[in-house]
Every structure is written in structure tokens, then in C-alpha cells.
Length: 341
Picture 1 (cartoon, one colour):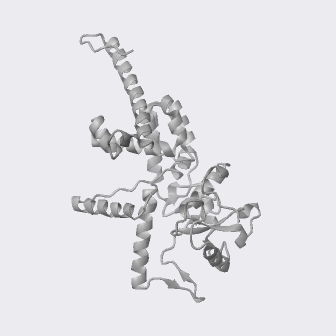
Picture 2 (cartoon, helix red, strand yellow):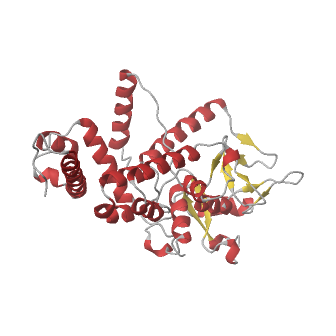
Picture 3 (cartoon, rainbow, N blue to C red):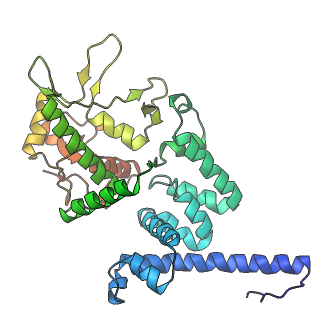
């Protein structure tokens, strides 16, 4: 029950009325986000005569562009974070909006617990600290405790300023990619496009590196630094999460000071497996041809061999997802579980 506004109330009465209104506002926003997501997910805006959710929200709800953007981002994040979505009626809109900025599928349950036990101001402060840690240089990556572990799993957001003309070009390029069938994670689509552009530039300038044995290596290599004492890994001063660290060890060249570099998979086998799989990701329904990696069906730590029968080609996204699910002890509930041959 909300107390109707009436001027001249006592301080306690005004305080109580404001808190009632604020609680009701948060409850209304929770419901609005869930209904917004339902209409978006099921495409119900089409039945209402609109071609897109933003068009529906502008015309029927009178939402501003900022509010539409906030709701679209939150709804999409909640679809990726089912634990946060399930807890939304309990933790509220404002706390959910904070934790989706830093939560990942591996950390969402911990962030929901934080939202349950902390006030909004305490939660905002922790989110801010964790985001700052996620961008720290390597010196901060070997700290212990809860926040560094959360920071290692926090998505890193990249932003850039464009002129109106550049933004128009960006929209035109994105539209062209969509018309050609590009779909899914925008980050992966963008990386794939940059990869193609880099490959074209390297082909024109002959940047490919030819080893003495005639094996062509890619012009760009990613160096992962692993601490032999604590086992933590980092790339360009940023920590790798457990799933990415395990994934990298599947298919890598290991270099130790004073010793010859060795491959985790023999080079001949490393060439045979992608060729056998026709240079496509073998996860059901994927088929990507870019950023391909070789994965051990049975991990080497569990006795898996570096034989073609134990190896399968996966793209980086499916490979990461497989390791995330394996580490959560539920590898069979995802569509990209490597097929058995």
C-alpha cells in the first residue's frame, strides 16, 4: 500500500511514505523487466504490429532511448545468467542491474549471494572494486581472496568514440554482416571480421612465417604466462579464468627458459585432426571455420592420449564453453559437447 502524497507530513511520516514508494517502484521495475523480456523473447511485439522491440517500447511504452537500451542489455544478460534471473524477484531490479555488469555463468551464484547479504551501496562498492581489479596489470593477479577470483571471471568491456560519420559506417558494416548471415555473439562476429582483415593484409604483405621444416605458422601468436608456483595464468597483464587456462593447455606450444619449446600435441597430429574434421568446429550446430583449436575428449590429466581418436576440432567459443561446463561437473547439458566418433 502506497501512502498518497500530502504536503505537511511529519519527518517520520514522510520518510515512511518515501520508502513505501521506493519499494513499490523497485517491485514495478522487476515486473517490467520480466514482462519486457517475455515480449522480446517470444517476439510478441510482431503480433502487436511492430517490427522490433525498441519500436514497440518507443510507441507503446513511451520509453526513452536510454531506458530501452538499459532494459535490452539487462534482459539479454539475464538470459545468459539464469541464476540471476531466477533471483530477480528476491534481490530486486537495482541490485540485478549492478551484478550483471560483472557476473559470468561461473560466478553468477556467488554474486546472487552477495546481492542477498549486502545493501545496495555495499554491493555497488564491491562491483566497482572487482571491475577495477579485472583491469589491473599482472602484479595484482596473484593476490588471494574472493575479489581477485571474481575479477578473473569478469568480462572486460571495450568502448571507443566514433564520429557520426564513423558510426554510420559501423552500422552499415554491421547490417551487411547480418545480411550475409552473421549471427550470435557480437564479440565473436567482430573478432572474426578483424581476423579476416588481418589475414588478407598478411597475405598481401607475405607476413606468414615459414619454419625450417616448412610448416606455416600464423602471423599472430598469443603468449600465455603461467606461474609455476601458484598455477595462475595471465595474458597481457590480465588473469585467465580456470576454464580458459585449462582450454589453452589442450593445444599449445610450451616454452621454458633454457629448454626447447614443445607442443602439447605432436605437430603431425595437430595437422591431421583439423584436416579430418574439414577445418570446421565439430560442436553440433556450430561449424565455424575461424579460431579453430584442438580439444582432448578425455583430458590428459585423466589418461587421455594425444591420438587422433581422442582429439576433435572446436572453435574457441565452443572449446571455452565445454571446459566451463566440464568444470561445473555438468558437461552433458550443453549443445556443444564434442561428438563421439
